[in-house]
Image 1 (cartoon, rainbow, N blue to C red):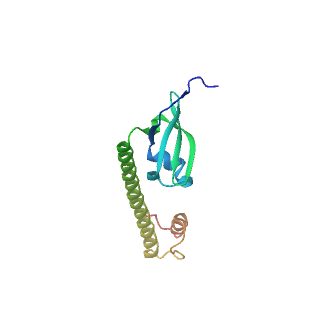
Image 2 (cartoon, rainbow, N blue to C red):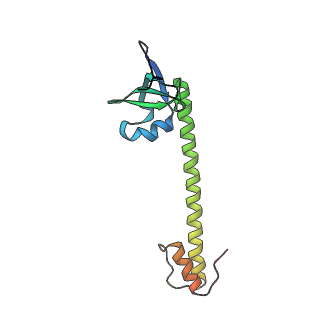
Length: 141
């Protein structure tokens, strides 16, 4: 039995999980991040045992102290930062996708301009490159 566990008696200590931790572990099962409350039941040196109340559910779990914030303002600020990081990631992802599509379409146009037969959209890039090489043409830089 762990002797480093302290039980919180006669106090309700609210605490908030960081958005990324809640979303990774509980969002799919228990709903959106904004609609939960946590209360500390036990505490160890590195974690809190909390009761999580969500819309229609309640459950107990251990949460690392590094994955918590103390106030609702910090929760809101952290959630906003998480949303901003997610939006930035989506923007970068979209840019990478568009660059890859352009490179693919440029390769198809290059092959057609050089008279390579059997090249069409839907083929894998490697297949198009192999058809270009089989036609005796150098790949574009």
